[in-house]
Image (cartoon, rainbow over all chains, first blue to last red; front, top):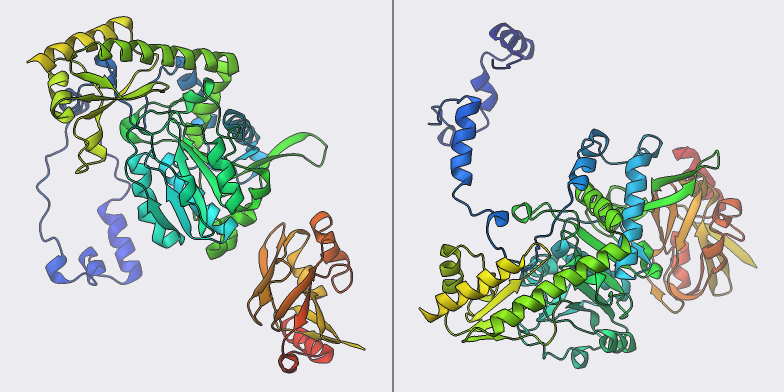
Length: 448
Length: 125
């Protein structure tokens, strides 16, 4: 039964009230040649069974990530999300609640945000964190804009190890954010030198670790070079689980940290919604964009939480605001918080170890395949391999053989002579059999 | 001998020789509510009259404080970092924002004197 709240009598009454003869009159402002004269040729409505059947058939054209050995990363990582995470975020109090602007009725949401911020600060070893941004790429933009505001300088030096999508997002915003980008060439074997490019015009240097090609970078010397010239170090990451094993950016001297939190608590989701993590030194608190949840005492002296420092935000400061963002990734940040709380620091370390061990195992097996070279001296759960020939073609043939082998670098960095390089990720979801199948299939495909 | 001048945007400037002490008026602090933070310019900065000199934030709003005249910042009120409430308690006294070395005394002529400011307040209250 269709639900249409209005009948013809209702419509006649409304038209008469506003003095209009028929509905077509309300569209008089639209030029006649732009008006649709007849109904669109859309299929008639279908019953629930037929709709299910039709969409199942469409979905079946995809190879779902969980259905085959899966080694795709490049900025989004397949991890196991425990059922308890979903179970808790599906609670209607969390799933349907809106922005906690009224603290008196939102203490649950606000406490979750406060815990989230605490976890992000601890994970990245930074002093303060916000309640999340949209994703890692826009978080990187916010970091660059924040560095410009703090230093009063325009130039941002962008490492060739930064995820290409993040660099492109920076380019999209740069002119409007008053930032001049110096984007270095793709740094496939981690040889670029950034320190000597820093000058008195530099607001920040933007680096990533593990970087796009999987290399681990120690930015502590670079942090000193930045400080010496009055520039800020912006440390970016795309795989949050890495900090269960590698030094977090705060320990290495980062001033601002921006990254992607999808790996914890959130699925691949066809590219989104994702989770922008953002942290900084406490002295920069008032320049930090996004929502911030604070802990305080209510008038009865009870511990309580509220959104705070709202004068940074655009609904108060308008064009003087630190950003035009007026939201956060609420549900995604909650999933992150729950998953990380369940793991705890010991669990995160164990998870990170398993990731690394699996990736090392895979790298060793693949390096043994003739014609394959592993480029990385260091990596966490993702590395770059080089083959003779076109990595895009290889990926297609591997897919036909039932293995989702990785991401050809040229897909994100086309026309730069990088066709032979393949990004391969291996997380805790790969089994021994998956990795053996990859090596075996790769050998077969290469030798044909 | 000092004289106090005012602007229609509720800044005051107390003029002493060639230094001006700048802050916001009692009317402004009452409108803003409890001040929680004041962002002051660095000492040595050159301010042009009419442009932003400082920012004052209360629990409900953030407002710009404009330089009534052009000059160089010679001092800022460091007490405001710990005690922003001084702006509410004593806006013309201990709640001062900054001191300026004034470039051109002729710019003072464009400001309101105490009586003119009081008359102006009557028109907007």
